[in-house]
Figure 1 (cartoon, one colour):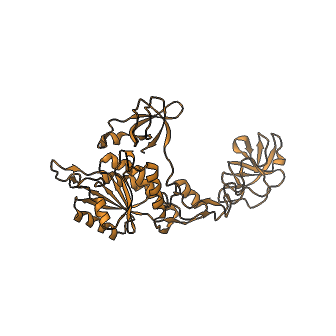
Figure 2 (spheres, one colour):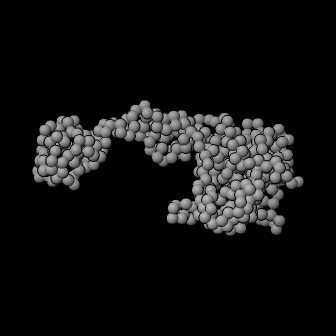
Figure 3 (cartoon, one colour):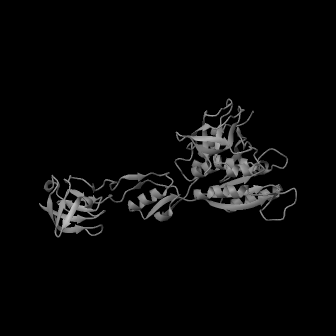
Length: 406
């Protein structure tokens, strides 16, 4: 089909444009940074652990005193987390120690409590002691000055714990991009509103915004616009006044008489990077720029709009945020759970249900009819089976790739 851009080329152009889009930075408390993208490398401001520490409850001692089971030692004190023993362990001595407590001077090993028996001020060991046993050496996790997190990392709860342990109270992240969402079409009404027989309920924007929210963006809901230049221009004016970084339009992206998004934006000087993608569903996708604002035009068919949101809008947002993994292929190995026909020149994204086989591979089976208007099928689908252009007929057990929708 002439003039269709391959999916990978379209995605590469989106990622490049998103990565080049100006980004703001801000300082945020570390406990509020989960999901944000780190704007600078983070170096440890301290060593962890700061001293040799016990990994278990038991007794700290000199291993030379306990080379064989049955050794008896005198208990001279204790060391607990936050309350270290201030003296030194000498020959024939031990201190009771608790998990996370600093190992006292003179001790080089820990025997766990279960392998001891105490009587008054003495402890008898049921096992031989080993130097270094049950001890976390100073710096075994990380050292001061060590780079542990790199710019471009999307911060997970584990990253937050690490950054805090590194002694960062605040960190520098990229500001949330502002994404404007506009649904277009004379036929659209909001859920619950009076509806004529020729009208349909508009939910594409709701689903697209739901998919964006976990990515830490600021969403500007521009509502619905009729299929008139005046309505579209008013919505674009509002998006520009709201300093939207990317305007996402849903519908009006094709070439019909009432598909006005491209001609209206072109009349305002928009630069179009591409139009029409070699994929199914979602061929009429377009991308460009209007002044400082990126433009992403999604198709109006519900499944097309939401598949394109997953495939293009989310990676674009990640690139705008400085996410180093924005263009990463997130598809996974699978096998076909049935027979599939040969494919044409477009890459096909088949809505499928997913199960695991005994090897742990996904088994992909169609979730139902593949019409691009079938929201009921998309809602129960667990993934998208990727059928390459010109793929031969597929049979049960053949290798494949799937993109999970969760």
